[in-house]
Structures are given as C-alpha cells and as structure tokens.
Length: 238
Image 1 (tube, rainbow, N blue to C red):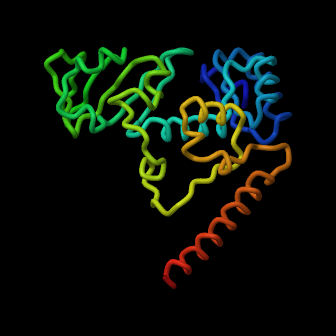
Image 2: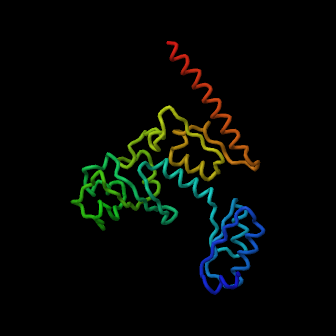
Image 3: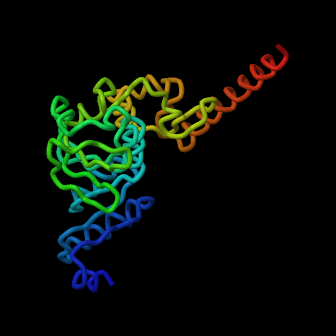
C-alpha cells in the first residue's frame, strides 16, 4: 500500500501521534520510497526531533499549535487568521477596531504596519491608496513586525487594557483557566502581556504526569466557584 502511495502522491501526512514507533517506521519507509514531502504528527518536542532526524520534512504538534493560536486570539482582539511569514514578521486578517474606524490608511504608517488589502462586502480592495478610509464592516489584511501587531501599547490596534473575558465573549463574572500549557505558550502569553491579564494563578503548566495539570485546574476552578457562591450569598443578605 505504501508503494502505491509513493507513485500516486508527492505529499503524505502520517497522523499517528499516539504511537511513535509506528509513526517513525511509516515516516522512514515513505521517505525511502521517494515521497517528496512527508508530514508527521507528534505529541512532544522530543518525538518531533526523532521524526525530523529520520527524514520527516515537517512535524506538527497539534496541541502546541492550537495553544499558539489561542494566545494569538487572546492577544490580538478581532483577529480572524494569522500567518507567520518569518521569525519577526507576520500577516494577520483582522476586523478594524474602534480606533481605526473613519481613519485613512496613513494612520498605519506610524505603526510600521502595511495594509495589503481590504475585504469590503463583495469588493476586494488590493493595495488601498492613502485616501481609503476604514469602515466598520471591513476585514483588513495587515503585514508588520510581530512585536508591533501584538504589542498592547500600540494604538489604535490595541485599545488596552481590555479584559480578556470581553475580548473572547466570556461573561464578566466568569474565569478563564488554562491547563496543560507548554513553556513556549506561557512565554508567548508573557510577551504579549496576556499572562498578567489572565493571572499567573490561572495558568497550569503541562507536566510528565498525565492529567496532573487538568486536575489542578479543576481544583482551582472548583474552589473559585465555591468562593463565588459564598460571596454571592453574602451580597444577597445585604
């Protein structure tokens, strides 16, 4: 069957992240059969290094990538999509925030951000000129340095401080708890200043013991709910 794949496809994904031995064997065999692009899935960085050493062209860590995506959503309100162009530059698709509505393209110059295109209903405005003004229904595609697009102090892209609950549609009486957070994701949350907004006490790092971070997060959430109920009862008595 693998030989048939080699003649029919030039790109193959090996989605067996829970069995490193089978993953490594299939990845190695596919490369030996001449598959040009082999993409493998992995559950850990150590397994990723092993797969890359035996020939995988790219190794995906689904949990880590979803964590980065969550950090992006939390750090850049209104962001729809993001594409990392290099170590320093990124492209994002974003809804215009209130600080941009009614202003022209030139407002982006001081922030070193380039407006590549604007999607306005069924109209696609490529390379908009300086006279173009932002409208509430626009969808913008911007290119710029990651530090500028993710910096909460940069106006008008980030009208901070904005509570994370309102940014992601949570109730103001709710609480966000992240469990199984990788060190890389924690570092990104810190760089984008979301760590202080979420609260260090609400971040539970991944450990070698399965379920340890989730259980710790569950205990913290349970305690918070109990405390909130007591405070609510005291408020009703008053």
